[in-house]
Amino acid sequence: MLIHPQFDPVAIHLGPLAVHWYGLMYLVGFLLFIALGRRRIDRGLAPGWTHADVDDLLFYGVLGVVIGGRLGQVLFYEPGYYFSHPLEILAVWKGGMSFHGGFLGVLAAMAYWGWRHGRSFWSVTDFIAPLVPTGLMAGRIGNFINGELWGRVADPSLPWAMVFPQSGDLLPRHPSQLYQAGMEGLLLFILLWIYASKPRPPRAVSGVFLIGYGTFRWIGEYFREPDPGIFGHSYTVSMGQWLSLPMVLAGITLLFIAYRRKETP
Image (cartoon, rainbow, N blue to C red; front, side, top):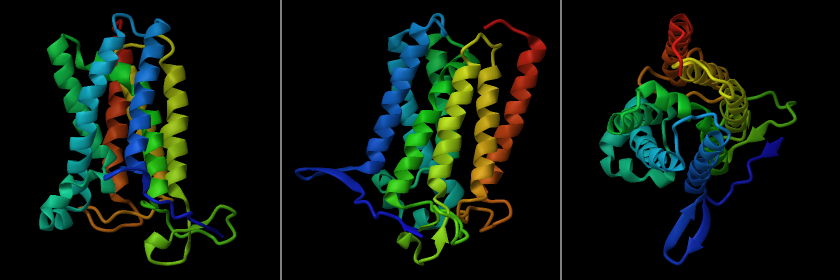
């Protein structure tokens, strides 16, 4: 069996400043967002959008991810702990960010940005949807480096079964962080990038993102040690799966509306 490398969570020491791998992975995600957004504009796939719009969206998106992601972790997964240790809510460098909370935070930020700039909500979400999965991939790699969110117990004969000493035992486990990086990150990016490479009706790209992420997250949860969540600790339907189900249903609804109305972008 493999053993988790036990990386130092601090990547670089700059005097009294410690730069954590988790933070660097977020930075990678943000840089990829800018690069891919500009790429879409330069290829003529986003008429009316400018490089300045991408930079501006990133600023609002960062606020949405950090605030929403942290509040989601607090409210959806560990309300008891954080309400007992309120100062820990601010310690985002230690990890503990909920995707679903960050997702809601980004939606709120994008709605506000669209309102300020006279763009429809769906035009904004359709533009950013293909740019998000690479950031998700970077975040999952950060989870792996931190040795957090490890997988469920695996068959010891699995060639890549891995022991995560951080789990408190020496049982072989799935490196589910890497599974999720591959599905929610790389594979979802490829699917969305190809789908969005041609004009699609409003809401369609957003709908495909919701269906794709919700489905891949649902699958990935069967390999990940489930978080207790507000509904309790379940190996049948985890908290992550409960939160992903509405995303899939919303995505199907958006696709139905998009192709039924046949609006032009």
